[in-house]
Structure formats: C-alpha cells, structure tokens
Image (tube, rainbow, N blue to C red):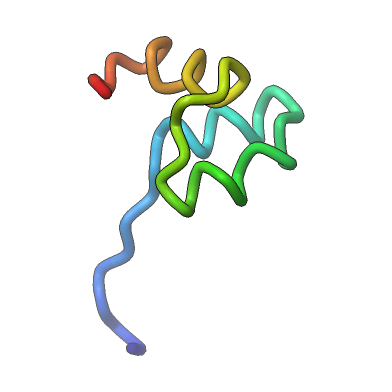
Length: 48
C-alpha cells in the first residue's frame, strides 16, 4: 500500500550484493537450508 513501511531483509540484500540473486527465490519461500542461502543468514547474525 502506498505510504506503508517496507521491510528489507538484510540477508537478502547481502545475497544481491554478492551476486547470489538466484538464491532470493528459495529464501523468500522460507528455504534457508541451502548452504548458499544459509551462509548469508549466518553472516548477518540471523538464527535459523
């Protein structure tokens, strides 16, 4: 909705920064178990 606050996942932002754009889709579905995805959550300190 226009004017609503937005949420940005720091882990997803790091995936984009490191060129792991393909990892965004499974991550967005809650699949954090893949090592390519898990690494970014670990790096930013997000527990599983």
